[in-house]
Amino acid sequence: AQSVAQPEDQVNVAEGNPLTVKCTYSVSGNPYLFWYVQYPNRGLQFLLKYITGDNLVKGSYGFEAEFNKSQTSFHLKKPSALVSDSALYFCAVRDSDTGGFKTIFGAGTRLFVKA
Amino acid sequence: DSGVTQTPKHLITATGQRVTLRCSPRSGDLSVYWYQQSLDQGLQFLIQYYNGEERAKGNILERFSAQQFPDLHSELNLSSLELGDSALYFCASSVYGDEQFFGPGTRLTVL
Image (cartoon, rainbow over all chains, first blue to last red; front, top):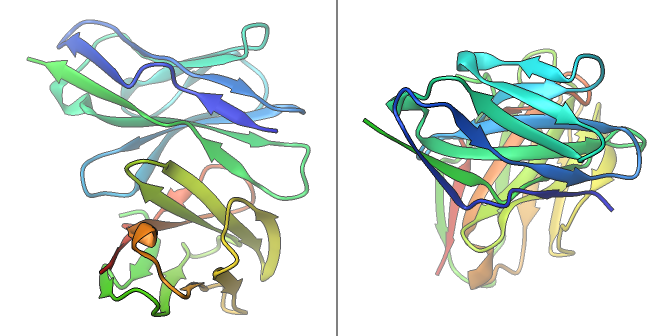
């Protein structure tokens, strides 16, 4: 069965510092991996995805993520955090080998960026 | 604006009642997904439709049902409502199985 783990409920960083939000996954086939961000009282917004190819994926708003197959991880990173990056971040996995597109989301990590 | 619309924005109803949530996907998207977001359960995948056909099912209760119509809009029907069904219900759409675009959600309160 598919699963996603975001081991940190909350990450605190200072503005201008690099940030990392962690995600590990488990799927039976090849993973399709996604990061989404949710601002208060809003729906989720797509940030980036990994399907195949380069292990370093670049996405919206300066975010990037590194796919590591041996560690089954897909950590979200940004070189320099902004206060406006404060939000709830979700990692998600879709198993490419199933007939449908069941997508499992992690529990979410709340990012606080302090000025 | 994601291009996905959901109605109504808020819904307040009583236990035992039945409600219908509606979703219109982005133009051109054939896949529609439904999710339930609650404080204790996080974001739970309920069901996915592709071009009118059910393709994947998650932890959707038997009291809940959904369908996707020929014009690709979708409805989620929730019946015999319980207090625990109070949550934010999101619809999302995608072209196929790639990144999803989420609507603003329907906040359901069951009293």
